[in-house]
Every structure is written in structure tokens, then in C-alpha cells.
Length: 248
Image (cartoon, rainbow, N blue to C red; front, side):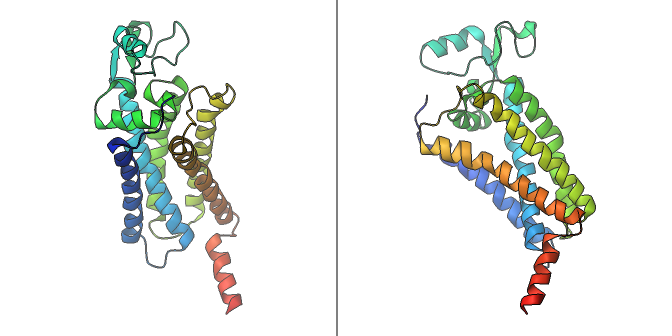
């Protein structure tokens, strides 16, 4: 297991994630009315951040999976020499891309570009992201291809600063998909003793594995909470207004 090393790649990766959050925040200030409720503003920021992560970060992960590779022999030499430790996450005799592709090994772990470096950094905590895990790749295809556009669609509907029934429905669809995707990403690890996870340091365990991944648990749950209120006529903003009137 790799030990935590905070270097330029670590810092630039964290700053990249922070920059996307700032883009989402300032977009909310620019596009939503000043009268927007805190719930609707939070959901706009979350969904735009979610879309940007899916398109830019996870989109680059898929690019690495499909287009970044090394020959199997070179990868094995690196593995034996203490270099890349990703290698193959498929069963024996099963190859990403089929039998015609068995002489190549794919993944960010074998690249040198900015996106490869970013995912090599995260792969220090979960090494599946440095190679090609078929479950992860399958989920990411849905996440980038469906989750990203749907998150932007929710933002478009929230631009007026309200959560109506139509918005609530699509928020529910997306949040359910996010929660299911998170479970299917980590359940195989939990059921097999987490062989690919590195929990040896605060950075890898609490920042990469817990903090970042729990964002895609608590905020989808919050989306479901607000969506349920909108669909049943018990919206968060209405209850807040009633409380304010009563206290006055």
C-alpha cells in the first residue's frame, strides 16, 4: 500500500475540486434570483458541482480507461520492479476490450497527462481507479453519460429559484442513481475485505475515501428530502416561511 505523500499533484487535485465548487457557487449567485431559498440555492450549487465533477473528472477517467494503455509485458515489468501496481482487475482470461485486446493493459496508471496524474493520486486510496475495473467503468459510463446531463437539467430548472414538482421528480431520479452507483462501487470491496482500498493515512481514508464519497451520500439524501417535500406539498421553503411568520 502506498503511503501518503502530499506533493504538487495532491495539492493541484484538491484545488481543482475546490475550483469546481467555486464555479458552482458563483454561478448560483449569477443565475438565481436573490430571493432564492437556501434549499434551492444549495441544490443548484450541488447539482452544478455534481455535473462538473462527472463531466471533467469522471469523463477524464473514462478517457484514460479507453485510450491510455501499455503493453502487458511492459506493465508486468513495472509491476515486478515496484512501479505501477494496478495491472489487471479482470478475471483470468477476461480482457477489457475483448480477446483482441489481451496484449494491452488500460488505465490512468499508465498515462502521463494531467488527468492520468489526477487519477493516479486518487488511486493511492483506491487502486481500482488506476486501472480498469469493469464494474467501476460500467457505472461511470452511466454517470457521465446520464448523470451529468441530468444534473445540468436540474440546474436549469432551479435557475428560477424554486423546487417544483417537475424539478423534484428529476432530482429524485438523479439522487437515486447517485446512491445506487455509490453502493455498487464500494459493495464489492466491503464483501471481499477491501483489498483495493488504502486506509493507512488520514489523507487517503478520511479525505479521499470518506469525505469525498460521502458527499454523494448526504447531498443526494438531502435532495430526496427536499424533493419529497415538494411532491407532497410540504416544501422546506414553505415550512421555513411559516416558522418565520409564527416567530414574528
